[in-house]
Image (cartoon, rainbow, N blue to C red; front, side, top):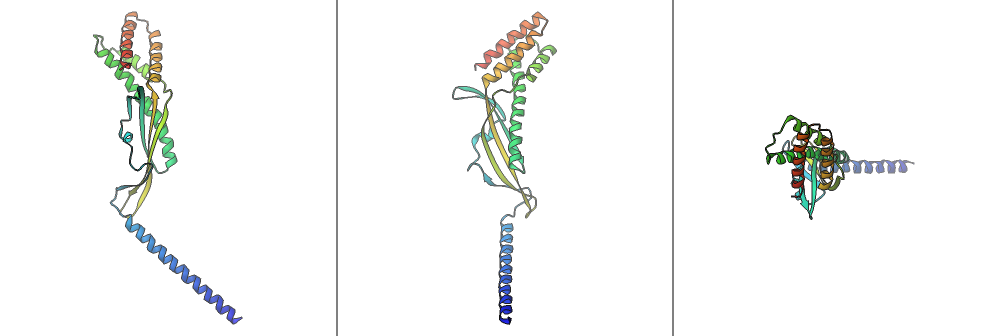
Length: 216
């Protein structure tokens, strides 16, 4: 019986020793990890990414119209940061639709002003209201997400303390033709409601000039 008790005590001592040793190693490992991760407050380090390098398209403008393989496209980007990757993905996709809608409003206005610049017609309050109506009524049709790039970033709060967050960049495109069809439909609706024939005729000429610009 005594021999059995001694064996139990010996086994217990061995287990305690192993536990102390493992905790000691873990503590030393943790200290080394902290020392390796020290940085300046505000410093950001990319610790993981979807591509070896950020693709060139990540640095493009948020909204642009360009030709790719002979097809004219509306291209839009969203760049989002969030602590959770899935949340960042959802927000980025929502931002794409928001950005393209905002870009379309700007595009409608700039195209009208370009058409107006080559005429003697003044930019009246009536025309301003027509442009605003069209800009608000051009739906986003056929927008497709084509590319996604993400980074996991370590940001230092102090020399030792840091947090992780994700950066998600998404690119989407829609055929420029879809925009043109929606825009022309909106202009057609506006023309039908104009009572002043002279004003309607002037606006029709400007719309024709805009359509010629679509071919560029």
